[in-house]
Image 1 (tube, rainbow, N blue to C red):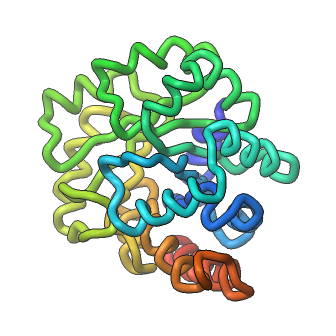
Image 2 (image 1 turned 60 degrees about the vertical axis):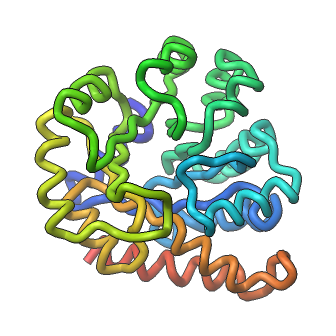
Length: 270
């Protein structure tokens, strides 16, 4: 059983949803992001989403774009991100890790090599923002052979016909982009989430994680109850950015982000 499936099944027996925090690899440097990654499970992370820095994003808002630029400036590469996951696995063999990024770096790395190397490093799933279902054959066979879940994205504008098409062969979980827009620019209401989720559940039995616009403990709690998980990204990056001095980590950086993560986790577990 994959780590992703095992974690969601364990949480189901606990009667609660998951908290999935996001961090941008190499932001503001490799050492700080690795230290934060290693500290996240103890602070309440059930699964962890790692952003792969990319220079030309299409879904990331200003906050995550700035984090990606800091990561690139610090020397981030796709291989470096896999090395970061490999280091994390030296002390944590259970927490599922999902990479979120864009297709170009994977295509450059080599699809088959990437899928194999990602699983060997300890990655459990990937979210490729700019890879529609019709182009998934570039990775699909390699990912399945390696045991890597390709996480499907759906949105409020996804029709029922499209949902059935996109989720027909989906694995891991479904990522529901809860707003029509970029990250960190708005949030869906509880009523909107309650209206959207039944339509998604009609198309799949996979867990549904709600992301984009989840920033407060109250929003995380609601999303994890209506769906199966809440993804918190821009809010954590903003907190980190607020502690930096001239782009460098300070003594406040890790404590501030982890304190926020603990508060989010407490709300989800309440």
